[in-house]
Picture (tube, helix red, strand yellow):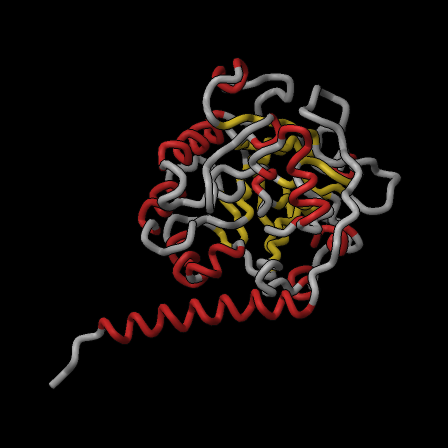
Length: 317
């Protein structure tokens, strides 16, 4: 059941209590009159593992379920540094009360993409790796494009959008937000992403300095681009995420752990939102040398896991 776009279904979110903020936005105007309203919950960077207490991830799950979404989109980094918590991850995924579609992030590749995928799929999660699917949501078709992790060099945009229909609404997921620039040109009005954790410390716009000016990200946290129907391009949302990979510290409004609700099919301006679309940071393209280093890190970690498995195999006399 789709709740009124003016109603909040979590009292804790309404009063500001809890450790996970709830943000809400309308979808792009491109969806209006093409679909009946669909509620999509966006979660990213769960980082199930030793850095983030599991009760925080369970709190995020409860907040998502309380909004009664039609679809849940998760944009990567399910784990944190290892495979030791895959059973907890599977348990968490199984507790969502709506269909879940997802893409992988860099930490999932560092820990072992195949093993992470197996844990997700056994919990009913649809993991998209450079592909798109068509789902029936509230009796209507919607296409979901899932781009594999661009940070570690696994994104294949042309493969992901091959055969995409222009007459059916489409939503895209990508762990790295900068991929949106090229997805918009393929008629995709909204891309959901993560990776940055919103900077985690956002006082005095520190997140824009560290991630934008120093780190080279165009999109640091929140909504960028345009949701207007007469504009070329589209919009991208960078979620602040739930977990952490290094330190769990969160300071400032933009750095809060968050669940984001998108009311697709509802025109922008219909209800109050956390913030309006922002201008992109200047950004800086990733060099081929740096990308090769990232890809080599994935291969090195994969080889290390294989060597450990070999060493643990019993010797047959």
